Amino acid sequence: MNDLFARHRSVLPDWLALYYENPLEITHGEGRYVWDAEGNKYLDFFGGILTTMTAHALPEVTKAVSEQAGRIIHSSTLYLNRPMVELAERIGQLSGIPDARVFFTTSGTEANDTALLLATTYRRSNTILAMRNSYHGRSFSAVGITGNRGWSPTSLSPLQTLYVHGGVRTRGPYAELSDDDFIAACVDDLKDLLGHTRPPAALIAEPIQGVGGFTSPPDGLYAAFREVLNERGILWIADEVQTGWGRTGDNFWGWQAHGQHGPPDILTFAKGIGNGMSIGGVVARAEIMNCLDANSISTFGGTQITMAAGLANLSYLLEHDLQGNARRVGGLLVERLRAVAAQVPGVREVRGRGLMLGIELVKPGTDQADPDAASAVLEACRAGGLLIGKGGGHNTSALRVAPPLSLTVAEAEEGAAILESALRSIH
Image (cartoon, rainbow, N blue to C red; front, side, top):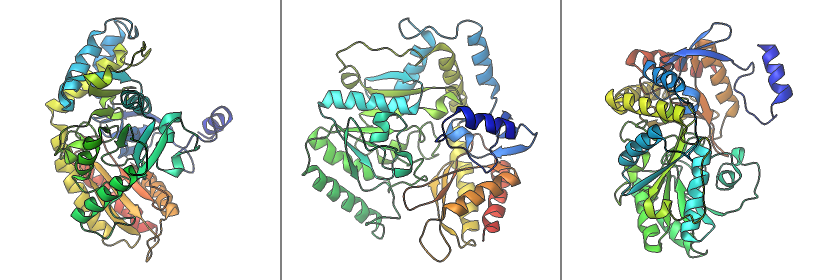
């Protein structure tokens, strides 16, 4: 393993982040479990950063991929592609967007990049509204609208980005307000901001902020924003890369918690739909999707083998009501973790919904972030046989819990017990 780590360091970038003091090589998985190169077994509560949505080595998906690979793997978007059309039809219908058009990419970064291209072209504006503490990918344009310093290596950007309040409920200048007053204050801030700038193209927002530590506003904030945006013709882009496909339990899409004024104008997706295969995409109303006046293709977006995986994975998700499972098992898990947190001085908050849960850590007796504790819990969980993630903004430190949506009650209890032991061990 040390040899592989040395080889990794010698040929890959220094900025390519790795978890753990002694990095882990995962060799195979099954269900909600994975194994490393030394034969150690782990319960996976992070799913390849929320990509393994249904289960590791899900037979229905591996069969679909194998059969498609035996026919043709790839032909590009220059040719008709039956699996791509079939998956686009299903996603367009599920999106809630009327007269929907779907464009497939290979990642969430590329999906958000495409959404920005569509919005700025449609609106003839290069000004974008984004949320503080947000993350939208690693491309040049996506970094330019990311409101999280830890993941933004440059201030250079083709876009003018203005950051709006509201993505973090329990920190910032409005944290002490009631939910209704919080929303009203954020709306007033948005209105004031719009009075000082040229008309923006769009607001892009994650319904639950992923890299930012699974933070979110009160339900209805983006609906209230939408009233203001609609008056000015400004588009709403919902970044559903992490919140889509029923992960939040209560809704199939994160935007539906803010859907009082209808669906977003543009929706981006990726991660879980491919269950590990590289699929991203954009859904938009036809008039927005078709606003480009130059040719375009995607060499690898919508390629047959990934579309076969997406179709099989989506069918499994819907037929087995994994959204309902996320709601039921996630509800049990969050209550279990909150009971633990009440007894651990370093836990500030347990938040989230469904199987998208964050545990914010602070130095005991203070409100100061404790990134060292987050790293220590990560290591302790690994030692106990559990893989989790971490995140947070400039003054926060959070653990991220996002298992495959097929998680059982017994596995939730197993993971919670390991997390409890890890949290108690750091103080």
